[in-house]
Length: 119
Image (cartoon, rainbow, N blue to C red; front, side):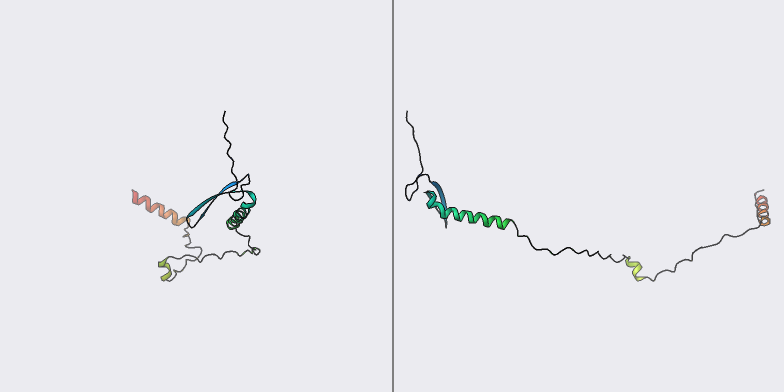
């Protein structure tokens, strides 16, 4: 029985355990296996980049003055273009026309004339 064990050691001092880091600078890629002490500067840069990303995504709270209620002003009444150029028409008086007062004798006379017209 053959058992193969693979372990990653630091490229600089051959310490174990080590993690693999890939770095790209100006289009040139580098891959390194680093132990914790040698990887600390890279880990610090990664942490600073995370914090900067979080601060950029969460906007800072601004000091807002207390709200004041200002009621909206009502819009001016609308008028059609024709009404704006014409002079306003005079209004009728209240009450209007009064009914004609007729006596009983006049009503009886009207009935007789309508009956004679129908015959």
